[in-house]
Length: 431
Image (tube, one colour):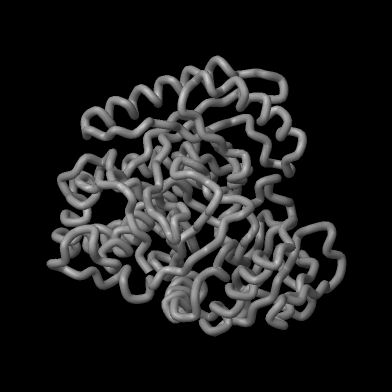
C-alpha cells in the first residue's frame, strides 16, 4: 500500500528520489564504510515525515516498542538481522533476558514483547522477561487476546550478573527507556552485554544531541548526492530552564521559536512553498510524545502555556518538560483513507527490517500523530526497501518511496551511533 500524496509540491522530493536512485551504489557503499567505523544501535525505530517538498526524520527511538505492528512477512528479515547482531556481540549466546517497560501493561505493548520473543527465539535464543519494576515481586502472567501468555519475572542480581531463577543470560536487552534514571541493579554488569547501553536511556540521552549529529550526517549525505541537506533535515534549537508550572524560561522559549520560524520562512521562500511554517516543541529528554505541542505563531504560546501547566502535574517520573527541543515542523501530506499518515521505519543492527504507517483520523497534517486514537497500517518493506525500481517515474513507485524511507531511517540510525559515541561516559570525548 502506498498512501496518496495530497500536494502538488513534489518537485524537490521527486528530484531527491531520482538522485537517490541514480546514486544507489554510492549510497550503499557509503553506508557500508560508515558501519566499518561505527557501531549501529542494537535496534532503532525512526518516525519519518513526508511533506511532498521535504522528507525528514522527526524522532529516533533506541528502545522501540511497536514490533507487534510488523507483519509476518517482515519477520524473516528481522530474524536474519537479529542473528547478525547477536553473532557480532556474543556468538555463543544461548539466553537473552529482555527487560520491559516498568509502567506499560497495555495489550499492545505486551504484544510487542511477544513479537520480540518470537524474533529472538527464531534467531536461536531462549528468551525470558525480567522486570525491574518494584510491582513485579513474583512471576506474573499476562494473557493476550490470541492466547499467548507473557510472564514477567523479577530480576535477580548475583555477583555482578543479572538473571532469573535458573536463567543466566549472555545478553540483557532493554525495552525500557529508563526515563526515570538507570537503577543500580543495571550498573556494572560483569561479563554480560547490556543493550542498548545505559547512556542510551532518556535520563542521559538528549534529542538535541541526536539532531546535532543528524545535521552533520545530513550535510555529508547531501554533499554525496549534490542536494540541499535541508530537504532531509529538520532545523532545531534547544532551550533549557523551562518550567511551565512556574512560568519560567518563557521569554527564552519564545525567542527560540521566533528565530526558528524565521529560518523556516526563509527556506520556504527559497523553494516557493506556500505553506504556513510551524515548529514542534517537545521534551529534549523524553520519548513522551503526548507532551509535544505545535506552534504556528509566538502569540499561540500564551494559551499553550496554560495547557502545559495543567499537564505538568500528571506526567510520569522523568518525563517532566524542563529541557525542550524546538524543532522545525514537517508537514505530512500522505493519506490513508483520507486520514493523515506518517511512516515509521524499524531497524535491527544496520538493517531495515520493516515498518508501518502511523495513521490518525482526528489530527491534521501539522499535528503529532502519536497518541490516543492512532492506528497502524503495515508496509510491504520486505521487498521494497532493498530493491528500488530503476527507471520508474519519481513518486510513482512503492519500492522507490519505501527505499527512500529506509535511507532516511538509516541516516537517523547512523546519527544515533554518533550520538552514543559522543555521550559514552567511558570515552575521552564525553564532556
